[in-house]
Image (cartoon, rainbow, N blue to C red):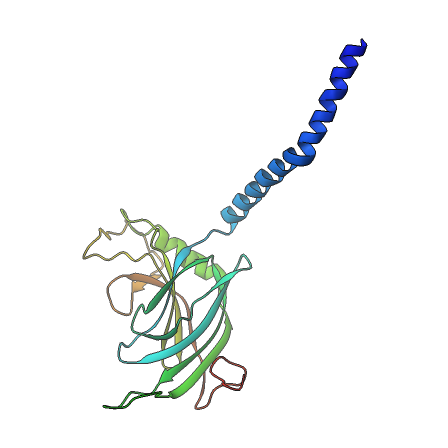
Length: 227
């Protein structure tokens, strides 16, 4: 091999090393990370990008602090302070199949006519419970394939309270007054899909539980002023 060829090969090797050290490996790691992320999301997809926190009765006001964990190791805050009615307050989230809920909520006293300032709470509630993620997955997938002509871009995960009762709903927010919510044939053989508390759209119930009740704030919760 001539000296010129050796010099060209050495220069090429040096240039490749410099490229790899400063640029190439970063490009490789970037696309490898994207590949791993896509694999992860395929196995553990985001099912809802909207979060709701509210109550069943429009006349009852609650303070809600709730966190729902999902099967991919993350979760979402689904407690948005003072709320009432269904679906209540909304926020942008990103959550997969739920597997656990940790929630505290309080029922506010009714405000008397002419009353100003704080009204205080009538009762406090809390729950810390697992969610059957396998059943939740089946229910979510049922609703995702339920409609003939409506997608999942408005999918929401919802925490809804009613006194000591607490629910986690999943909905696609298809409202028949403005959208085509015709279901596919035999779309729900297990009867998972039910009407929302306000009877305006369809939901699946991923969790239904009864919280512990107290007339005073539970220690260490967001309602405990000493905490």
